[in-house]
Image (cartoon, rainbow, N blue to C red; front, side, top):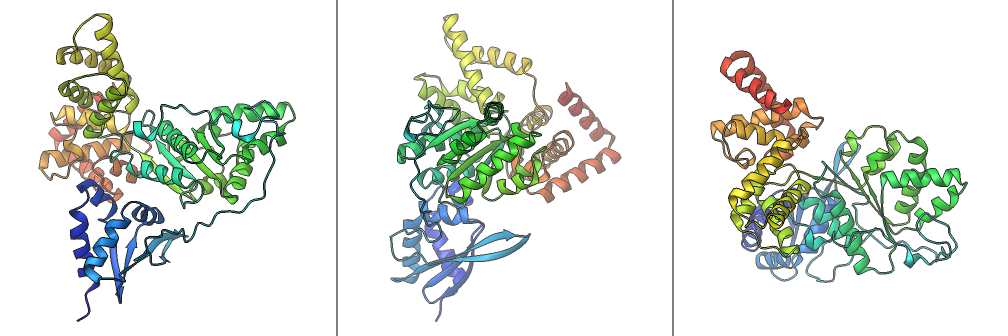
Length: 475
């Protein structure tokens, strides 16, 4: 009797689930759909080429083991990757990978380029006459992957970044567009990709530059009539990192030159990493032709870290600095500084400085004094993390409760109120708001806003809650 393809995949998932952590299983296997079984070849559907590449890079041995257990020797796995083209989904079949363990890249062939001598090219960074390998990449050596804590808030971007560093310019996520609010680790991640790439491929030319620096350099090149030298310099980079691309907004000529550079690098198999404070669709003042190219690869959001991630970040920072600090103090800081990573580390630095200068032991009381002052004196940006904190504080809820899966009435209502204020007081899309509040979709956010509006019109006490919370948010 022929085996049912759904049952085969279900049995495979049982073995996989026993061998990976819960969060990993939910991230990489929950969205996979079995499609068919042809002999000993199982076809599965995955959401993107990134999924396909990451599965093959990370879980190839486990997948092979599961398939062999179900289908025996000669078992194969075929992927259908759901792509988006003109808003119409279609399947892109990828060849069977098993049982062979030789991982050959089936669609990213290296680009054969003629040898180029760039030693005489003038550029903004090096003295004319120096060789390519002597170009300073402008990277902070502290910004490595080992110092970058992984959590739900950055897992997709971090995983994509590491995959790029192992095969720059040859993955499907080129460019990698990293976006998110201030202090969430965009620069750290972008530079970590550059550092890892340089460690693995010493012949690669890597360069980090901010949007502001790029604009200033182009202005100088225009004034000095060295536009072509400027263009040629950037076209010889193997991995170009442009931080804060929104700095190019409204600067038409700078965008024109970057458009030329982007096209050349992309067409010649070079890698681009771009960061911004907003998603490509929300960027203002950027030409449509550039925006369309930003969407060619992978757009990955960095959201506010959850409580567990905040605590892990503090632990990592303390370890890196050789500091011993108790868990209860780290937990207090993680619970009260919720906006971003920069504020988290700043709070810990303030606490350590106060302890050192005043020769005081770091206690929970000292932490409370320092953190309370920081929170009170900080002008909060109206972002989703801060809105959640204000709503949770008002209803005396733990900040983690609002992003949990619980269906308790009081928590569901607090979650809906947070979504309502996020929609009305930020410029974020419904999908982005939902992803940051419990991993919900845009339809859930829309329903939450309608529910809150209805209760405001019909429930006087509820309207009082909303008015008081809004005052706190606007303080």
